[in-house]
Length: 559
Image 1 (cartoon, rainbow, N blue to C red):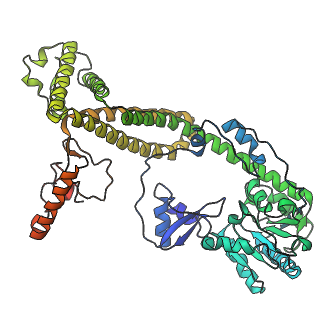
Image 2 (cartoon, rainbow, N blue to C red):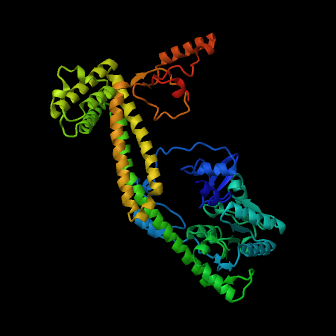
């Protein structure tokens, strides 16, 4: 990840450093993505690279793809000016067709053919020359760039030419409304990233329409035609005049991937220097063809990744349906007793694989029952070693159910129902979170299975199923074990820097909200203790942890 952060992630292109934090930049909108972080230690590697404070890696609590999230809705519909180029994806993923609605007024914008230069420097020099010419005419100009870095580079070139302008990128997002408001006025020059390419309505100032309207300059073709169409669409809105032109160089990312060699050879044969461009409609078509190939490649990648998410989506539905059932249902006793029977059957198969108590590990079974459920099988009126497999199974389940009934009588029915709900939710959330982490690790390297002649998708399906099966087994074991050991209490929980999930232990108290009287009594008690002095009641690092885990404070909640 350190190598990826150093070589592939560029400052002011993929991210910015602001207020001592690494903030990602959305590739398509050019806006800052506050709160979003890269996984698997990559974000931490970038923070180390930039010398800012390294923040602890986050844990995935839930995950879902946009496609599966949208497909949860019964009805889907939308409206955008650039959906036609993605019609195939809408049909295949969502079963939705794209209908083109005619514009309110005829489109009179002039879209000039692309201009191709050999180098990026020559391209930017040509852009500055055109801006300078349009500025003399008094026409407003909107210049679209692909990154913060390139918008600032163009800004420096314009300053050298003495051309007044505004820069709109993720670093200046607070001034977005002010900059856009003036972008259609005479002599206005606005250099922007993709922030100005979508959802922005630039109103023309007085006299601008007579001069030809807003002129849009694209300094590079994006991988997606939608992004380019969105930038072009800032000019010529509602029947207004306008024009657009894209400047391209053979060093641009898109042409480096597709088509640059033929154009480069042609320019060399013609003896063209760096500042002499190629301008012809077929060049524009060739670039659009390259864009189509990139779009198709990205679509195939998204469709393939969606197949992976569909596998996880099946598991996610099961888990969420289970959680909804727990929250809706008042009495979960039958579900827990069913879990108990399943756990006992599985453990019997493990300790007595031949279904023979004399040949199997009967002592291991007795030890496990004692440890998990506080039930001493040696205290029965009959020696468990003398029972057949079926008799042992029936007697063990019967004794555990009786012990469960006794525990319910001790705690009371109301407290038992509350405990059942808390335990089941806690264990499901904890193990689902761990399962997602395991799945993330598997998914990260599953593509390498292809080198071994195996289908990565089938391998992922197999391993994800195994992870899910093990998770369900651990949930059942934890829930049944905790129900025999955990207790409810109204004591205030000790403060901890660790999240609540995963800290629940068998034998530890499960805390519920105190009543108003208990809260008042606790507040009075705290005031009295405070008057006596804090040092007297301070928990020592080697003292037993007050949460009831049985561990030392320094190795539990005091970490």
